[in-house]
Length: 532
Ligand SMILES: *[C@@H]1O[C@H](CO)[C@@H](O)[C@H](O)[C@H]1NC(C)=O
Ligand SMILES: *[C@@H]1O[C@H](CO)[C@@H](O)[C@H](O)[C@H]1NC(C)=O
Ligand SMILES: *[C@@H]1O[C@H](CO)[C@@H](O)[C@H](O)[C@H]1NC(C)=O
Ligand SMILES: *[C@@H]1O[C@H](CO)[C@@H](O)[C@H](O)[C@H]1NC(C)=O
Image (tube, rainbow, N blue to C red; front, side, top):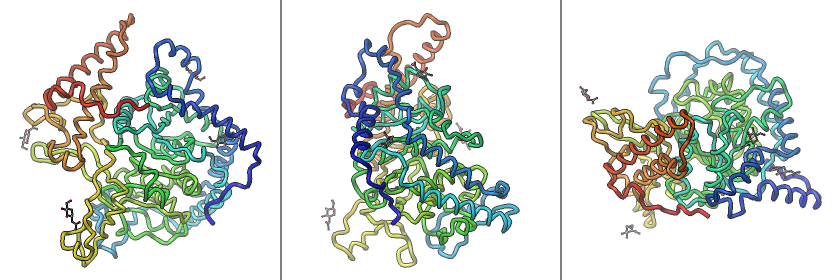
């Protein structure tokens, strides 16, 4: 039995826990926090310091983290950091081809010895054992569902666009925004603006620093993602990168397969797996052939903590020792190297199920002066992906989708191909203040006329069912012109300069939207903006 259930907890402790939970998390369920607060409440809110409240972890979480931190350090690989070949991977190695069943994974580790492998193997085994012991104590509020993301000060404007897109789908699930530390915290954003969108900031350093161990390394870039999932209070988690958002309400994903059947859902990248063959020896599991699946694109992940307790702890291990050991081992310098291959591998290492969407990602972008310019990546609906049962290409059926003649086999086979669900605008980042300043961005034709960035309206509507790019620009306008609501003149020179820039950004975006989408774009068809 891999799923450990905690031993019986006495009723008193349960009631106590419920009270603490209601006091700390209960505000999520109170409808008044969903609405934009009247001005006189703002002072009260500031006094309450919502971020400080949402970044307070109880004694059992702190104790768990201390034990987990000790387990991580006790499982430090006793060997030198790994190195991979400097030259880029050959396109043949990163091209995914399910028909090449006997293709070998590239082996690009430099000076990797048997001693290194043994050291990594022993350390991995130590962590695997600790994960088993710690798993039953993994903290989360049972039965809760929410969305988790990370943002630093720089990415907050992008996150606000994504968050507004999420709310436009009608989704009102609570969002926890994990930010590095108090230096990256901005009080008006965290304590007024985000709460008005049913989101809360959580300061990672508040819990991380309680790891109680001077040797614990501070987290870097990619590592925040797994820490956010780990420290979020939700049992059912949709993790979204700050530049990723759904085109439809994602709430349904939590109550349908593959989430309900697998508890871990990932999405594909454009590239093949480039896991080092040594990884499988280290983890003591059978190798996953490179023709099995695409590598993972981790802009969105669904994870159920109650099922994937051990996977989550191994994900943390792979990321904690990512830069020195597991990022080179699992990616070997492939595109987007980093955390992307740590999620599925962690589930494999502990023998738990995962579902990776089969439908290949679609590029968002358009042709521009003779070359295709991708600005983002669109990922399929996992529910229809699973229903559609995309054929795995083989010698008898070479395409990854059903053909008309295949319907002869099954007359009920009249399924639509899965449509994109998540949009991850990871190349042309949606910072309102820097958008539309560069005439060689896809937002303009080569002759300088403004245009859509994701191609023709009809194609997009056919693909997505509605004009999602129009909605996106409405939301960008809403975000860029938010200063209009603030009113009041700032006395400070610096603030005045800031205000002048904000006015310019708002004007620039309005003009573009009016030219490209017509005047109705200024306010737009507000769909489900009232989320209370
Ligand atoms: C502490 O917080 C966790 C996670 O939010 C919760 O599951 C647990 O019940 C809490 N423990 C106590 C003793 O309140
Ligand atoms: C909230 O509390 C934190 C930590 O005590 C502090 O750094 C921050 O400035 C507070 N925010 C406000 C708006 O008072
Ligand atoms: C398949 O779908 C089309 C369009 O929705 C419909 O006209 C057709 O009757 C369906 N065929 C079967 C076999 O259900
Ligand atoms: C478009 O491509 C042509 C040919 O490669 C080049 O000469 C021209 O400068 C390009 N135009 C722009 C606006 O980049």
